[in-house]
Every structure is written in C-alpha cells, then in structure tokens.
Length: 162
Image 1: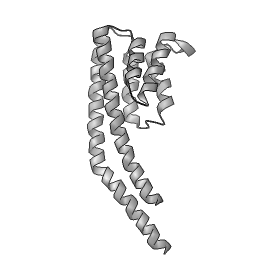
Image 2: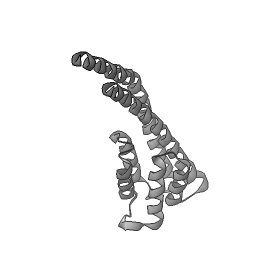
Image 3: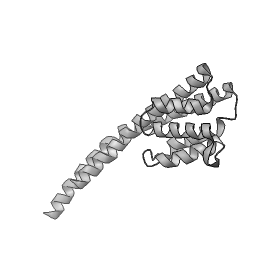
C-alpha cells in the first residue's frame, strides 16, 4: 500500500502544481488590472490580490502587501520582501522554477512607473503560462507513470514478501 500511495501522491503533486500555477496566473492578472485601472499603489494592489487568491498565494500576497504598506522589519525593496515571503510558502509550493518568476517580478516592481509595471506583470504572466503548459505536459507524461510505477512496486513487494 505504501508504494501505491507514493505513486498516487506523486501524481497528485503534478495536479497541485497545475492548480497553483493557474491561481498564480490569475493573481498576476488581478495585479495588472489593479495597477492599470485603479491606479493603486503596490502595497494596496498586493493586499487586494491576496484577498482574491486561494491558498498559498493569499498568504504570500497579503503578507507582502502588509510589508509594503508598513515597511516593517527593515525590508525596503520588493525583491527582499518577495524573497522573505516566498520562503514562508516554499513548503506549500516547492517548485523552484515557479517561484523564480515571482522573485524576478519582485526585482522589477515598485521602482518603475505604471506602464513599466504593467509590462513586467505581462512578462510574468507569459512566463507563468509557459510554466503551466510545461506542467500540463509533465502531468500527461509522468502522471500515469507515477501511479503505474507505484502500483507495480507495491505488487512486486507483496510477491517478494510471500
């Protein structure tokens, strides 16, 4: 049962990544619209985005927004704030390539004018779409493999024990 469970768990992690990437894409879209149409400052934009997102992105955006508004703990740059908050959610979204998009976004936000911020958010949105396509392809190729391999290892271990 352990091997079967591990195979199903590995396959479900691929589904989890796809769900979280879709949610992150939605978050970047909300941020872009908030900055473009409401002309909100970055801290308010992050807080509003955090209110609309699912777990774990709601924690990330809400806490980052609070940091921007309060400038607490000596963190001043979006890059530093994003890195600190990403460390908190790394356990819930462990895919490094996905988090790198947010780190690059943090480096470019906050210091630019509205037009450049929207361009940076559009670039991040495109990167996330690429990662999403990659994750869907990975699920197609590896999802069934993980489940089958887990079940096969489970059956093999039962045969070896008997």
